[in-house]
Length: 311
Image (cartoon, rainbow, N blue to C red; front, top):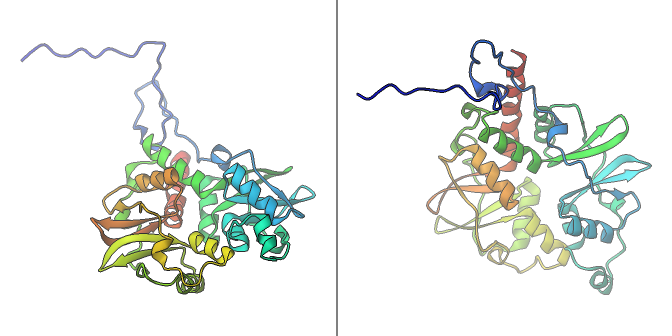
């Protein structure tokens, strides 16, 4: 047996950090452990908010969504948030057709007040991320305008939350116990259809049942997936009738295995800007995991971080 290894203490210029969260473990004597407090909305929100005024036109909404590469636009009147517009709303209202073409088709002039969603569910800048997740989950919405006493100061979206969750899992602020396997979060009762299903039939079916993602199966195997965004785009362009779903499905379908961790699914959704992942074994569909499923889980995961900070 060789000589015992010698472990040197860290250099004074690189002190140990015991503030890494609940998973950091006990601190050595003389170094009291500091646990991070509950993560606040102010830590993850987007501060530069792209907005519309209450008298903005549909064309202005389209331009802002396109140029700023965002999916939600709070609507302001006298500095107050009075509504919100999503890319889904604009897709259905316009089909993303340019103004000149809509005028040629004699489409009526449309303003955001005609299709914005109101009243708006908001969150306080000092509220916890867990509270924001609960609101998104309870109301079935993808973002929350963030307010303080002066008014609108930011916006927090599903993407912000999922990115924060993936990062917190990577840094062990959220422990592996709160980063479960996809199999425990996915829905196994999946509504699906075939690639030859007419788009108008699929649109009415999804709308009546509140379905946002529709996997396409052929001979029991996954061949694609379409979203309500895809269908709303076709509605706005008047191209829904007679179009089979296979023409709407993206060329590459992002999927995930049931043994992957929730944090990996969250990062995949953030990276590829998608709201659902078919869960597969090869090309056999096992279930589906949506951003809404992950947001519901994030509410509990971030709440545990806050609870640990109190102990």
